[in-house]
Structure formats: C-alpha cells, structure tokens
Image (cartoon, rainbow, N blue to C red):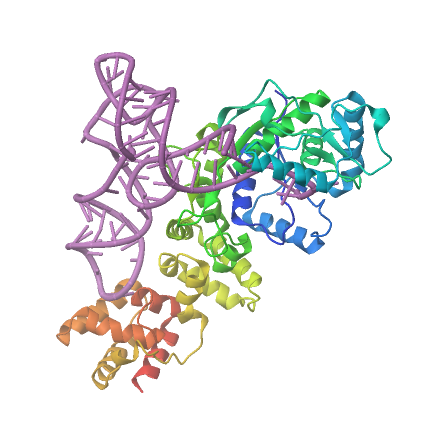
Length: 465
RNA sequence: GCGCCCUUCGUCUAUCGGUUAGGACGCUAGGUUUUCAUCCUGGAAAGAGGGGUUCGACUCCCCUAGGGCGUACCA
C-alpha cells in the first residue's frame, strides 16, 4: 500500500477536549509509526457555531500536546462547492435522488412508525417517483441506500461488523439550502485528502457503514477504519466537565507535562505488554492498531499524576527548566531572571523528586526563588523556640569558618548534634525552618550548598534574632 | 422499539485453550531517611451470571443481565 495518511477532524467548539486529544494522539502515533502523513481538518461547516478563536484554541491544544501536523489545516467549509459537486454526480448516477418531503411529513412518518413499533427510518416516497411528477419546490438530496443485502466494515479495532441493508436509511447528502451534510463532507474530504486510515471515536461506527455507501456509489476505495472506544469519567458515566472532559489547556494550567499527557492518554485503551511508563519515541515505535482495546476506559487522575511525577523526575534539568518557563509564560508569570534560572538548575535535583506537577516545582523552589528574610509560616513556627534559636546560634558559629561542601556540612551538623546530645532531626528541623521558613523542603545540606555560605548564614542569623 | 458495540483486581491493563490469572496506579504493612518526597520489600484485591464446545476455558459459541453508541436538513 502507498503511504499512510491519517487525519484528525475536530469541530471547533472552543477547545480541544481530552477525548478529542486522545483521538488525535492515536492518529498521530499511527502516522508517525508508519512514516505517513497526519493532517488536520477543521469541521467548520456549521457557520452558526464557528469562530476563528475556537479553531485557534484547537490548534493551540495540539501544539501544547506536541502533536505536529503536516501541511496546512483544511477548512471543511471552504470545500462546500466540491461537496455539492459530488452530490450532483451521485444524482446523475442514480445513486441519490431528490426528496421533496417536508419536515412535517417526515415527522408524521416517524411518529406513526414509532407508535406502530416500526423502525423510525424515513422512507421517502420520492425515492422511486417519476421525475416528471416532481414539484417546483425545495428538495434535499438523499442517498439511495440499498434495501437489501448487507454492509460490512472491516474495522481494525472493532473487527468485522455487519449491518443489514434495511437498517441503513436514505441519509441526506445536500440540505434544501444546498449545503452539504457532515456525512457527505467527511467522505468527500477524506477521499480527496487521500486519507488511508480513519481513526476516530466509536460513536462513529454506525456512520462508517452509512458513509461506506457513498464510497461505493462513487466507486472510491474505502479507507481502513479503526473506531476507538470513548473515554468515560471516573464514575463510568460519560465524561463531563465535572470529571476530566476539560480542554487540554486545563491540563496545561494544572501543570502536567505534555510528555506525561501523551503517555497517559496513549495508555488509555492501548497497551504494549506491561509497559506503563514510556517516552513518546517509544510509543511511536510500539504503536499499532491491533493493540487498541475495544472497551471504554475511565479517566484516572491519580494515575495521570503518578506518571507526571515520573516524567518530571526523568526529564533532564535543562529540559525541565524549559518546561517550567513555558508553563510560567502560559500562566502569565513574570519571566525568570538569569539568577533564578541558575538556581533552578542547581536546585532541580532536590525539588524534582518532590513534585508531580509544575506548580509543585515552583512551590518547592520557594526557598531559592524568594528573598530574605524567610519568616516561618504557621506550620513551621513552633520549630523556632527560644531553645532552638539558641541552638541554631551555636551551630551558626561553627558553620562560619567551615569549608562549604556536602560532606563537611553534614559532618559539622552531625557532630554538633552529638555534642548537644540531640537527635539529628532536632537540629535539622529548626535548621530547615531557618533556611526556608517552612516545614518541608529538600535536604538541608543540599540547600546550604546551593545557597552558598553567605546566604545560608544570613538566613540563620535572621532566624536566631 | 430497532441496530451495533462493550464486560479480567476500585482504576488502566497483560493473557491471543493448559499460568499459583501477571504488571501498574491507588490502598495497606514495613524498611531507608533530617522533613516531605523518592527509593526498596511485603500484603489485600479480578475473569458479570447461566448454558454449551473441548481432555481442558478468562480465552471459542449461545442466552441473560448491566453499560455505551447510533437511529437529525448536528457534527
């Protein structure tokens, strides 16, 4: 087969939601795995709902997630003439017909069918009518779907799925105002864009059967389908804003690493043996449609957080700093100074293993981002008693002419504690509070080395005053 | 109503007829440790129910139950 082409076709609703992001990711992973192309198409045919800002929000989400696309995004709306052209061609071939039934007539038909417990699929009287009897009235163009036989989709995820012809309706291709419906537009665009693999949510599975009729009518090759299960909320119900159905920018704001997001989303419904933690490169290398599961998965924030923490720890300090700065920019924080940047690099090892998301990195970085004096917060205050102040005073004097490295500092503090007949913790905790104003921080010795002698001693003097 | 899909620990999953049903998150008991975290060791925890097929079913088939999606001049 020729080169693989996949696409992601979101409708611009204002943001890229998490389910869409996963669909995009699967398309992207598959294309990259196959050395193929990954296109973007904005389904903007519903002009009442469309705004350029909404489309931009989707692209921003894609960029943040690191899912790069090939060529320019295609606007579906810009192709309406082509869609109509295909509808007319189908009309000419006899694969479609003009239907003059009014909305009222259709509603009546459906109500009656429902009352009689018959399928509510509309059966247009114009399907086999003599064209000569056609009124001079608005019409829609309907597909002439086969009433017998079967339609089978060989789906890469769902397997072989078959429908009876009579369960497929004569769907509308062109509305009475001449605009194309989604069903038509998708097929025409996918065909024209050379899409070889349609990977999308399994809410489209039935649509695949209906859409295949258009391909057949036009004599076009069917793409390979892969309908992936949707994501549910933690309670098993449909994903809503209450759970995780937020836009991806919400996850950016919460400070998850894009790398962790890709990892988590890929693992939701797809597996590679027992591998849970992996890089994007590995995911690309390993990805295959045959390892996508058929059952829906629930969104689990705990696991996401765990993976995010693992990725933070695994990220090189320089790269992590870049992510931190990107995050800061996205949150409109004031940019880091050169000094702060240097402090981040020297202190990164101490803070990265204590954080699961970027805001926690900033939180832990408090002791080197801020300026003296560091007054203890409410939780730390009780460590600085008169007694411990005095003790710190004694320690400080021993520190003044110490050579400033990890081993030496540790030795001094330990010896001091022994001499005072104190457990190390009794010395280290007040020391930590003096240095940071807080109860929790990286190792006191590492912090002292990082801060330097002058700064460390100044903070100790602040505390013992 | 009709059509289609789904169902392994609480959650994500492995297993592609033969396993003490494995891993991960979470939970839990310990250990390491100056705090927190990291890290290490251990534990509890699963095949929806019922029929078949088979020497042997989580795995194949059927039924039931539960859940989801679709059934628009929305996408």
